[in-house]
Image (tube, rainbow, N blue to C red; front, side):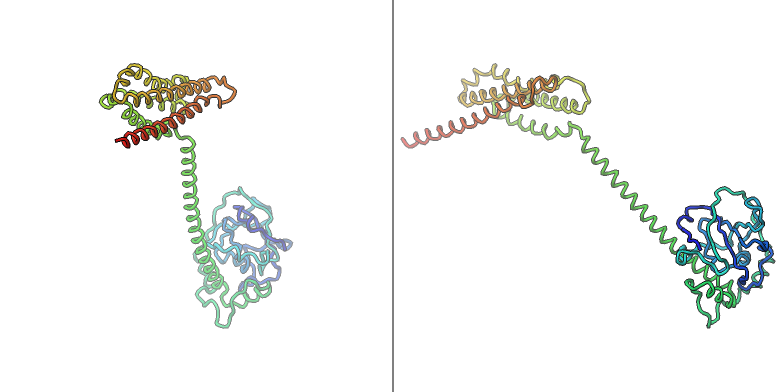
Length: 400
């Protein structure tokens, strides 16, 4: 007997089974084949095409073709498929027999007590529509009376049907049943209930999996958006801490240079506006929002660096004549020497960004390194001067 791949059967919506029935087998409690299922003497094959995706092969474990008709299957000749009148199609079922696939497979084979073999011989996707033959209610009632549906299922001394038994044992068990049809109905009901319970569990698992996949997709989208937002963050937002630092430095510089700046806020506002414009222009340039030259972008910074030269050249004499003129003079020289290398560094940087004339970018930072060196020298000089002043004051105090 050939093995059946049930997973392959599930993928096919319609398929054909070939049933080779036994010649001398008794069909349940019925001793003869119904007229509708009589086949020619030279032909023992019965082809049945299942209509439902949930294929009900379990019934072939117990029932003969005659029992299929009496059990509620409505069949009709299909002359369009073959010329033989032994071709049948199961059109509909009175019961929703959705049985467990595991019970269909016995050691890899599908067996039946009434058929020598059951094998797949082909599949049909497009087939002609057929009207369903409805049996009369009187015939159904006669069938129920004949089979004794109201009788008890099994007597106390009868054993349960063993699905793993041999073919002869199954035939013997079915033949000795007092009411095989009612027994089969009860077995089908139990299997249907188990199948429905499994279907509910499967549906719950599908819903859980669907919710889990939805959460995973939402989390993946959030991660993608977060990564894009981090990678595409605007430079203007990055420069916000720099603006705050500039604001604090400006306040400290204004308060430390001269008293006139404390009462006059025009220079403070002017310098702050210049820095704001520079940072905004630089952020827009880096974000490719504007196509300006870097010289225009750095223009507010150039003006900011040049403005102390203009002011100190105008107020230099007044600051020197002040009581603390030496201190302010020191600050002026220190500020001018620091502004000069920083301005040169900015000019070199603009030239490198526009037209890289230098072979290496390290040449651009030479003024910046010079600026650090000069600031370090001034810090050392200021420390030495402060130490000398303290010693002189201590010596003068000791004389008194």
